[in-house]
Image (cartoon, rainbow, N blue to C red; front, side):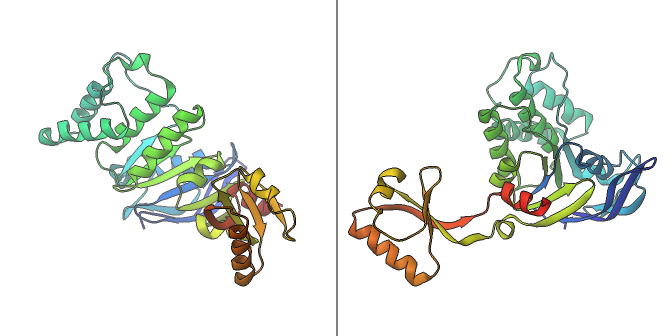
Length: 298
């Protein structure tokens, strides 16, 4: 495990922000840390970085215990805040070159590593100064900076929260690619983003972890429901099935069909073939992460 958080509590005066938080984060995964704004996510990340003292409990990162102040564990961490700041008169390459010098990266490693990262984040051909960059471009440069020294853990604090759909998709794609060389701790309140790229998900609610598991385990199959898409529209497919006694609904150009057994599923597929409906895809219907959260919060 890259990260071990054990019974961490953090108080500010009489207010208990984190309550006996325990998490373990495996290597080369994208670990989703979800929760509403104000749940305590940023407080825990600051504790992981040694920026806040713990009231009680321990945190270990890459085998190093985290201590308040100057902590050796930070040599293993890359950090992307929700609003990264840069020297505005540099361009992306110049800024990463400056970071490489400041962090004492070996000269022979600088150029190839910077080239690799600029290609990863889609800024290899950008020569304009950072002051002209969009929010999404700055977030992508922030990821490149955080990955520069090959950290074992990349902590991202709400990296997609203020981006448009295209910018969000770009950041999610980069983070998913980054797990081949590091572990990504992805804090977000946007559940659909976590659903797209995370291997494991934990939810913090009012300072307490209310669930933690593999995403696939959380999104268990919904009551023997299956999702079918066809080479035609879902509406047309449904019109061809009106005489059949199945519970069928439409969701995002797919049919959601209740099939209680394997024999019933095979029978349904044969009936589709009889009506010349060509199946494009078929899979078990999984709970959206939002539904999982709402069920837990009830």
